[in-house]
Length: 457
Ligand SMILES: Cc1cc2nc3c(=O)[nH]c(=O)nc-3n(C[C@H](O)[C@H](O)[C@H](O)COP(=O)(O)OP(=O)(O)OC[C@H]3O[C@@H](n4cnc5c(N)ncnc54)[C@H](O)[C@@H]3O)c2cc1C
Image (cartoon, rainbow, N blue to C red; front, side):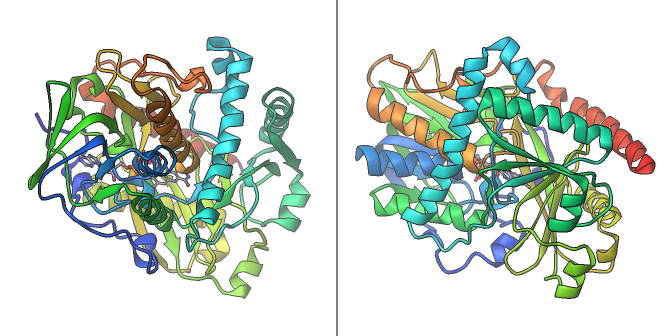
């Protein structure tokens, strides 16, 4: 049965989110064609975000496979057209120490190295396909908020360099203030390369256009409402058509319609993330906080904020979203986010906020991405659960799924280069109907802890 754990306001596929990205997406927009009537293909992809589009792009380009994407909204309607545009190393929400205990140092290092490659994969997609996207910055800056916090981050950076092979560099309190920006709640930080900022919706459109150019068929406005299998063929039904396929890639991440297939029930926890953007800041306003960097930035609050200066000098500020997804809850949460931003950047307190929007990021119970093929039906592939860091991770996941299908589709082989920590379905969430409520409790606790340390700093 069609039900979801958040308000229906979050699933209005025919309404584009009122984001800055929608209003600045440029002229390269993927064709908007609804599937009508009966169609067939080798591989059907459900979901037209980066995971599905990257899979379709590589299946068509690298393996000449007949692939069709079905997207419920417009291309990039989901998180791929709404995110902060940080193309950075991540994708997991578990500490490296715990991951090493559970898997091995080798596995964790392999994963992080794959994520460095994933950042470069996005860069080469943008360049090779001549997408109209400005690549901004070279590193992600993680800001410490206290001396103790900087000491912990310095230790962690040493660990990242030595054991994970990451390019992590410590920035002193004075250096951050003099060469990056000067705001409240900052005590130096750490920079990690490579990272850059992009226009996320242009990237989704760019991938879709590149996939089509290589022969993939892409349908938008085509929500899959029923999924059946008969005689080795899958039948995906939308309101106006049916797609028959030998294989399916399920690429719906935080907007996952769990009711379509039992295997995916309770496997993910969607969490809302929100973004506000200002009008373009003047040079004087930028100087008032000594803002000098193109790099994307995160802070070390329990409920992390992410921010960057956009090419036209608008300031983008993001953080955890509302707990219900309804309009009222969303508005309250935007106001909370605006307050947090103004506490950190008091000289910008009177700068107008022009856009506010939100969407789902996706967690798994084991806190690592879930990439694989169903054990009880090897014709179904999936990729989801990037823990708020999917620009590179989901692009890379699409490539992994395309390689898997393209090279080993008909055999039982698992690609040897897929890191173990992402392999297969993550365990189900217990008491799955209550997922949103236990999350809500945790968010309130973290807000309280952040408020306590705001008062101390
Ligand atoms: C506010 C916000 C900020 C973020 N910031 C960053 C960031 O700065 N950097 C970063 O790396 N990551 C960020 N993320 C996460 C990142 O955007 C995601 O991890 C990534 O876009 C996931 O891509 P995807 O293709 O797997 O999922 P999505 O882009 O969500 O695509 C899934 C698609 O499936 C479609 N779908 C669902 N059900 C059906 C159905 N029944 N039939 C057909 N289609 C269906 C949906 O319409 C949706 O378009 C952010 C996310 C949000 C929401």
